[in-house]
Length: 460
Image (cartoon, rainbow, N blue to C red; front, side, top):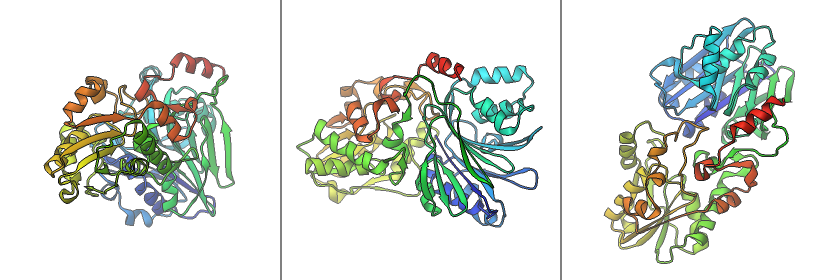
């Protein structure tokens, strides 16, 4: 999981400080590293570092730089980010000029591409998916940069939201299945591209629209144009990530025309119908991504809602921290139940999902220690029982709690009095996007069939 942001001013207005601010709004998508790149008198300059944005980059220094375009990236990655070459954006100079790339996604045919590129003389310096894209473009030196980019993108499989910075252009691409979100905004003569619309809000830009699956958007001093280069033939099937609405995205974002806030609240409402807990005295959400569903649950069930679990705002998201030991410590540091609320109460806790079970087990123990007589857990998504092939966060199936245990075993493991989930049908209805437009593979195992992908791309 990553967050990407870019800006291009058609009138030469400096954009680096705004790009930094836009990246701040995407901090929830990656907290391990951050980077920004911009054209600088015939070369690409960049600033990259580990940690949260304010530690990794200097806003003051960036504000002093007069660059009319830039791309930026926040990372959540299993790679060794102490090695600067693994921190995006990546950049290079090649025969046709300069180029930099920010990428959110997972190239599923990376191994085959890497082997092919190395056989043709490419030397890799990082462990990132993105470097393969750079090499693909560089090996098309007989083509103009945009032509080389289009040719390269047609060779990719998997998920990609991509920003490509050229000396005088900013290019955006969303994979043909729409796995990863990417949107376009505008303020006066500056265009913005972002993983989520909340990043447009912070710079005062208006959301124009989402980038369509398979679309390339090209921005330069003459304005903006669009190319539909990778729309799959003979099918209306898309694979927009449902987990964005469950957990990943900020609730103040709108993705593919659907409010994340409204989707989560509806998940909670439907959860109250399908997995009621009539014995509960209070309903509370697991902050932050479970809170909105808890409001919907409370309203539907008429169970009083309490902000009974307090989050330490200075600690990151535990699911995307790198090791299990750090996750376990992070829960205790990050979340604290209010004893006066829970004492002698039967509580139903609403969480957005159970992936590894770290947060649920720890917080239930803490709530019991706060005096609750019963703790029931309700989850506003189906059980996560398959690894995501289109992101880096949950590739190891053996770590998924719902894979290792039955519902009853998991309930016992996390020490809950009862455990209930939302159904896939209710999840899809809550999001408000047709099922054939969503990816629910982490819940169902229904992955995109690569043979279909190959056939359709061969028709291009």
